[in-house]
Image 1 (cartoon, rainbow, N blue to C red):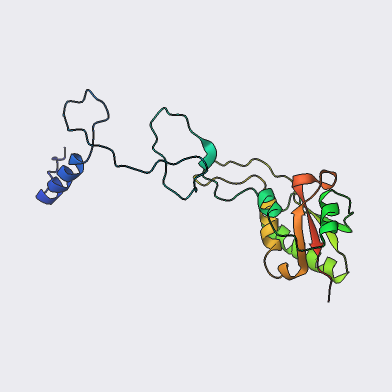
Image 2: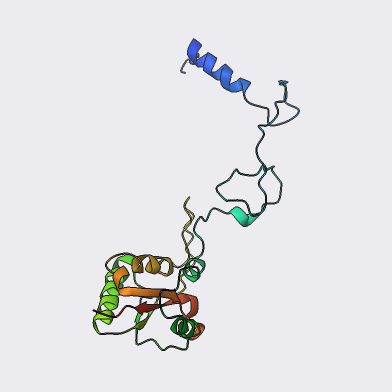
Length: 198
């Protein structure tokens, strides 16, 4: 049987400093310590900036999900707040599903490494052919919570496609991206309005 190891003087001093800062979990604990006042924190109010201080929280208190961990706003919100770069009348017709896409690509079931080159070839090829409005179908995605520490978004391609469209070499070819009308796939598809090929 191994002999118990004794703490050195430095280890004992460190332990005493840590123990002095702690409070017992149960009130009926054998050691009495003077209650210390919790540090004063600014109270967070509804509508505060999410990067501000966290509100105080007690075990058993109801949680408000207004500040959940998802830092990015939903993709539909971000696209709807993007400036309109095309003719306003045509943009209104497009959003209402009144403009018919001249071509479409369906990325359903593809991995990101398969979808990215397909999308790039489709967009650049469509612009070269003089098309103006194309439809990119991503699907709404499946719920894929793998239980890991980092949450995964539902619809990986649905969130990734607008980012690919905003980066070179596709950004120079695109005038506007917006979620499709229900008749063309709703939130599982995007209208992509292309610049004229010069």
